[in-house]
Image 1 (cartoon, rainbow, N blue to C red):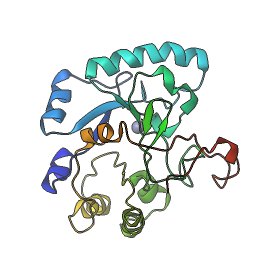
Image 2: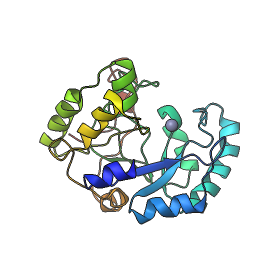
Image 3: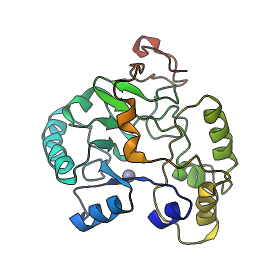
Length: 229
Ligand SMILES: [Zn+2]
């Protein structure tokens, strides 16, 4: 995955799972950083259930924070994007990437309704602003990047944040070609340094908000504190 990105001058942020069936040796973390790409923590054991129960969450958050420190990371993405942003203050993170802007095809409804970063308390939220590869390839069954192209065009028009989830390396075939096409210079967003995404937003005047819940994402505006664009 790093090689595909590097061939198009794209640096990615890699979310690593500390527990469960995963093995995260220091050499892996070092090799990602050397390329140079970013490391942050994804869920805890990849059950997608980190936020399932408050008491369990509080216990797990201590283990999470230890892994975060061990990795030298300060960012988080929830497994399957199953999240409870009201509890994230227990995680010693500076930024989160668990909230989509819209969630028509996401496992959890809601969304921030913005393509701009914003703060949840002290945590900078970097919303997912484009369709996940899983949703495109497996739910819509499309191997075309037309939807990504349309999203890129719309977001760039507003100078918003382009963020993508590509969850795995596909072994050849139409799926792999689809991901390769997305990375090609004519379609890909301008090269960025993911580990520099968070700091520049610190100290900026960024709107604070929580999520918009409801089928349309707009039905509970009492939780919606402002509009980034
Ligand atoms: Zn995952």
